[in-house]
Length: 345
Image (cartoon, rainbow, N blue to C red; front, side, top):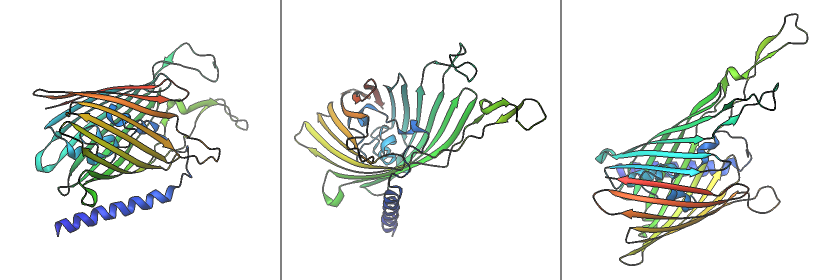
């Protein structure tokens, strides 16, 4: 009976996800905010083009599919990564996860954007005031994952978002939920994953910088402060379906081929592909590509991010230490480089 309930739960989740998949249809392109939620984390996932939704495991999997945290292989795992993003913006990620036995796995993550110093301009002084400011964009998350059966993992994340630009700020939250299935159709190594990401209520900017000093034309009083009411913006929700195949070529070599379809309610849909070859579970070589469908009718790929490549090296010893690197080509901006380290004990 318990197993039947789990199957019903997963089936309901998949059906609901499929309904969401065909409901959005790309009609809301460029209408969502909180775009920092879309910046991928971790060198391994980025090198694979974001395609390993079906099988990525451990702490780094939280961004791509929170169910993957259930595959945590150590009692404790910590991870750090840094990426030089676009337009001189730096993106930092850190996380810690613990295995709490039969209860499951818990993870806490932190993401932040560093915009550097931006010259302040105003309506009265469009050439600059002589001072600078730096926006603060932070996302903190907590994730829970566990096995439903010996082959099925499920996970859920709560993300708290904070955006602050000088004296104006907005805050909100989103939910991610996902499932991973290993051994699909009784084929060993065939993996399936589904994840709903960034579902939450609207965010709205508030603060003293939205006050403007003006005189109403028909008013008898002098200058007064008027509040500019900011319009709320929605979260950039996504649905991803992934399929992967992991095979052991020999005693030393293992390969992973992965693909995913990502439906965006704020942008064009994406098709993601990736592959990894590992030697002795010590040396890893990766490559990936993400293609965005064209809805403009002009033809071509609407994604500014091109192919990605990466490598990783896992050190032996009492602790599992893995150093990862990824490179992602970018149109119009400098290419992305990502450095990461994972430590498990």
